[in-house]
Amino acid sequence: MLRCAVIGAGFIGEMHMKAISKLDDCELIAVSDVNEAVGEKLASDFGCKHYIDAEEMFKKEALDVVHICLPTFLHEKFTLLAAQYGAHVLCEKPFSLTLEAAKRMAEACEKANVKLMVAQVARWWPEFEEFKKLYDKDTFGDLHMVYSNRLAQHPNWATWHRDPAKSGGALYDLCLHNIDYLFSLFGDVKSVYAVGWKSPSGCWNHVTTSLVFKNGVKAVDEGSCEFIGDFPFTFSLRVAGDKATFDYKFSAGHNIENLDAATSQTYLYEKDKPVKMLEFPQFDAYEAEIRDFVDSIINDKPLPVPIADSIEVIRIMGAIEKSLETGEIVLL
Image (cartoon, one colour):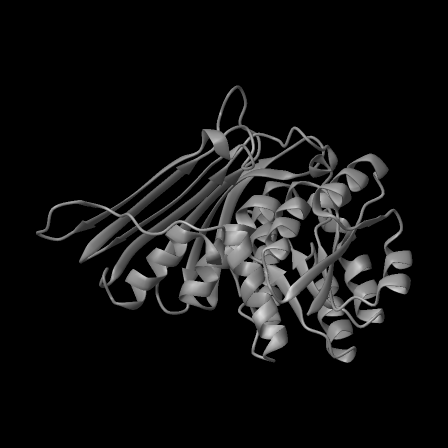
């Protein structure tokens, strides 16, 4: 039985706690958050302890696994703390805002002989998993174009996203989801070219990136957190090949957590065949992700998201940021 704790009692932290509570091999011991009211409520809801100070939690609880569900700029501090106390780490995305920080975290966990995985939940999203299955079966033939997006308003539950030193803006908070997923499908990136809009605070918050992968696939990703009015949280994946086209669209409420308002549709268009509306089992992607992470610990298996992948994705994001700043194609 793995003794688990969550650091960060926001929406993502709660999602992790729900998932942990459903796993037979895990016991949710504690949640840590400096916001006493929020932390105490979640601890009460899940029947675990609340700590204001994470290091006090580590000293008292002999934890096996910690889930870091904090703002991006705090990831390194608490990953290093977890490694110091010998706990395996599942760290929410984005992993870090610099390649140097990503490497420091990976090296600390390797030295401590603990597993470190970045929670790239898009890889477990049901529709994205379905596309991968179809792609692996060569359903699409030669790919002509891949398009993904993740579009939103600013979160209405926090303000730290508006500080580029804390969040990296939409580039790191939103675009990174799809860049990681595309990397998991197509492998190494050859070049990137990006255009965008930088907010007065210095965040790249509207970004469109063209990517050329070393295997020849070309893709465009669009990300933004600057939509206004009642614009819903939206993401999509559209892939066109010479044999078929895949088209998935998802829409929620103001934030992705407003799932009561969510709608989605997935279509497969195959050459000389009737259009298919794809239907397949839905499941909690966060639970699936955490279940696979736990399985890798218990059975000493390779991580489902290798830390080398996450480091390479941060390198790609740095190249995109360089392209935004210089207006040039950046080779990787």
